[in-house]
Amino acid sequence: MELLDRVLEFYKVKNTLVVKQLFLKYMNLVLEKNKLFNLTAIVDKEEFVIKHFADSLSLLRFIEEECSNKNPVAIDIGSGFGVPGLVVKIAMPSINVWLNDSNKKKCSFMIEAIESLGISGVNVVCERAEVLGKKEDFREKFDFVFARAVDKLNILCEYALPLLKIGGVFLAQKGYECEDEINLASCAIELLGGKITQIEKFVLPFSDEKRSVIVIKKLRQTPPNFPRNTNKIVKRPL
Ligand SMILES: C[S@@+](CC[C@H](N)C(=O)[O-])C[C@H]1O[C@@H](n2cnc3c(N)ncnc32)[C@H](O)[C@@H]1O
Image 1 (cartoon, rainbow, N blue to C red):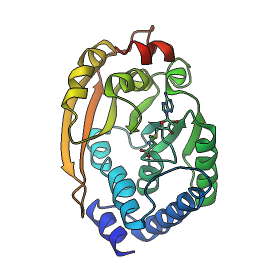
Image 2 (cartoon, helix red, strand yellow):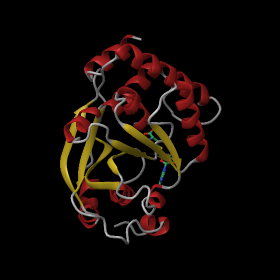
Image 3 (cartoon, helix red, strand yellow):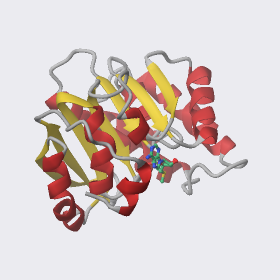
Image 4 (cartoon, rainbow, N blue to C red):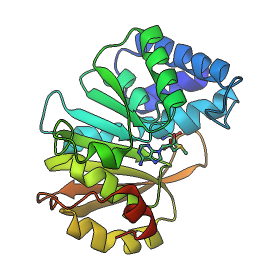
């Protein structure tokens, strides 16, 4: 598939022959499972390459820029069928990734896909992210948190920031117009120990799809009373 070759070249992905085969296999697994239960509205393969693969790969340069660790550990909150976490993992084997979703069927699919692709250094955890944020094994353990299409930024920050180590980075993938969300989230970010260090707006390659990545660095420990329980987070966002 020529478009996929161009996307891999655009993002300077190494070992393209292997990565391309894994991406194609993964896309076919998603589209096959999608006939049984809804994983994605995008069923056209070229659209899939742009909106799922290229969109996920747009995180690579932020990971490279922000990473001080040779084998960083990341968690993808609300990963769904594995986007962006599994796509990043395939393209960047040195990263260890936890794929997190609260939906059991989606988690089962991700486990199936990982087994079928035969990749290691990737785990699935089926739980709400705010529950993980209170568990010792997950709290302040990650170099990166990713999230795409999960919730508004003020709510997302309460899920994401407790999971980050100090110095870790939250990469929130958003649409192009994200200023209102950012303004609404500024108190939450400060309270949870974070700081916005970059707001990058760009167009996905070979398309006119506009996106933003909001880079939030964790500077201080998150106070122990966060994350609150789900009801409070959703009904009374910070
Ligand atoms: C719209 S889907 C996005 C999936 C994927 N990130 C993507 O971009 O295609 C949102 C996903 O987030 C999950 N989710 C929502 N809130 C969550 C939470 N607090 N913890 C874990 N998963 C959550 C849902 O189960 C759903 O699978």
